[in-house]
Length: 405
Image (cartoon, rainbow, N blue to C red; front, side, top):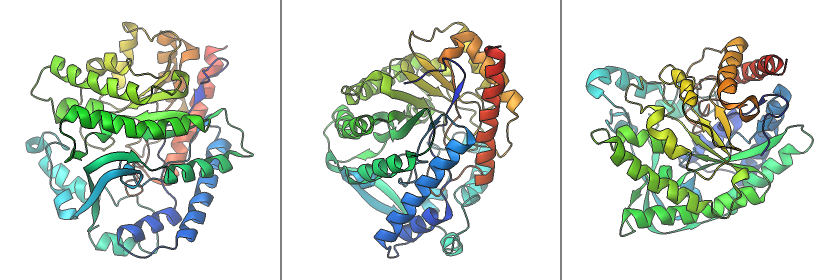
């Protein structure tokens, strides 16, 4: 994995707003309408080629396929892992304020009620079927549970690898990465088959190891996404001690490292955030509660949410915590959850704070999280997404000029 040896490199977390052609296909699939498979495959190839070209033209150094071939950052496994089954439930069920997902419902209940009504539709691209989809209340959602032994099916991942390789031909970038889900995040899917949760956790890890090895074997950087690991501090351990949470989390890192056993460390970057929703985040754990656990992951780079107003101050933790030798920090310098476009000078300032503490060569500029964790949940408008990434590139260039004189 390349570091910022001569200038600050730039990247992002992975998911990007899907174009209308992909969204239209996903809507029709969600509504149970027939899809022309060849037409969908062609639309996906074209969309991936376009998004890779846009990233390269913008000046991003380390790019991905936008996760266009996935239904969501975690839900894609339902199509790729045998043993997981889908049931359907209504948007009415989804819209209820679930304390496990939305903390402090007594304090923010009205906000969550109204937020749930627009979260999945506000920035959804215009397509021929969009109006029918929204008017129908988005009546079908896939809910996944484990009903049998887990086994990874390779076809969809191989399609994504092939599309990405084709898209990278003729573009100039430093490296390319593909995001995948972590065992701790996937384990959150209900288990109705394995006898114990630990047995289920390591079965998940074994299934995902196939995916991990395929991505690395294709020559890409493997990014492991693990939003659930820090979020469980308030979802499952809100009334328990930090020590109990850490004991739980450390086993999940053991499972991750088990899944990565055949992947070289210098091909892996590990991403955590505190949930992608544009909500108050007043129950987020402190970075200090999870950082020691995160640094145990078998990865060369750590992508960590760092610029939203609940966590921006935490860059100071690197004054006392030493980044291990040979490791790379990818701090979030842009927020995925606001349509305000950060100024390049602010991006440069944030970069210099991290560079001063961990070394300029050990910092790569990134984003807090993805811009669209599923095809149906863009967090910002697509035009704003590209403006933000443009500001990231400009800010990294400013910082590089100052850090390298």
